[in-house]
Amino acid sequence: MRSKTKKKPYITIFLIILAIVIALFFYIRFSIKKETDMLSDTIEEEISKLLDLSTVKYNYTNVVAYKDKKKFNGLNMPFTNKGFLIKYSGYIKAGVDLKSAEIDVKDLKNVEIKLDKPKVLDNVINEEDSYVYDEKESVFNQLKLKDLYDVLVKEKENMEKEVIKKGILTEAEKNTKEILTSFLKNLGFKNVKIVFK
Image (tube, rainbow, N blue to C red; front, top):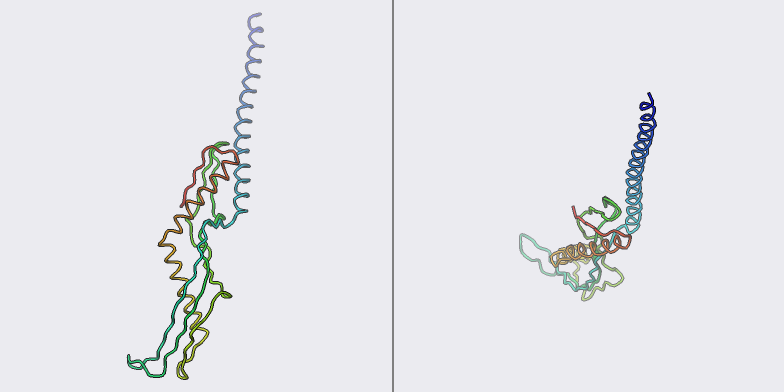
């Protein structure tokens, strides 16, 4: 009879200790998850403040000649020549749109960020810096504002193709990785993985 009552307190103490251990396990597990979720939200908020991370800017200046003649049955018509020279300057910015960033905080030391590939964010010709020279027109073929507009649109497209060929997007990807890795390491992460989708 005595031995049964002696065992009862041990079982009760054992069950209390087991309940405390289980409660601590779940508390620690969920508090770490909550902490990483909060950290993930904080990082997302900080990164979204950067919005478009313009990592590379390429300035350009160029002079282009425009010439046009009216044709009839494939033959140039006399006295219909028109043309001009235009000097223009502008810039192209390439980088990553950070609004689409997916942030996965693995734990307090490891983070992974998935980003869209870099793209051209801006391609601007400064109209104030554009100069038109050597204008020529005829009564039968007059210069129009649309002629100038069409030339500049085509030049913007050509410049964009040229800088992409020269590697502006590769440079933007490299700079984005460096900037974000430095930013996240300053927040205390040891292992930063950046993936471009």
